[in-house]
Length: 110
Image 1 (cartoon, rainbow, N blue to C red):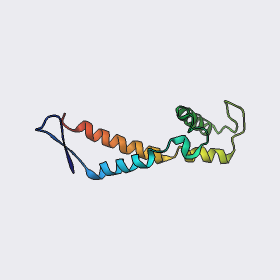
Image 2: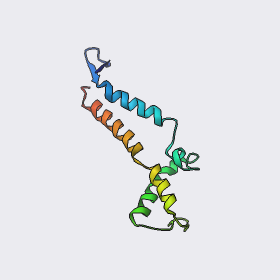
Image 3: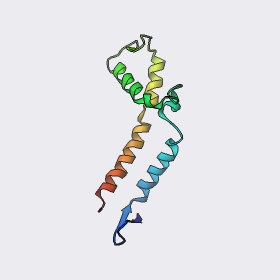
Image 4: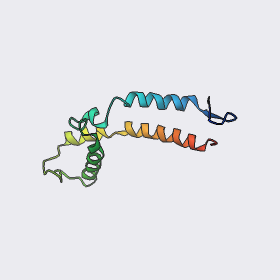
């Protein structure tokens, strides 16, 4: 456990070191990257488009569409695999760890 003093000197916040360490490690690993720069050329220049691409990919997969509703081009199995790999659970793991730490912090006395 790691004890951190709050603004009120009479209280200390205890955070499990393992959870803090895992979150920091994940953040350090992910910080220099954007989702787009991990696997998709072009999205690193337009990172605000990543959620739109992710949502579109999920829609096309759910409905087994073979061509893009936006541009009409064919969506190959290779492209689907690339997009799926881009939006794999690596980001979900980081989000889960972050949410776990956030929830832990919210339970602490204020």
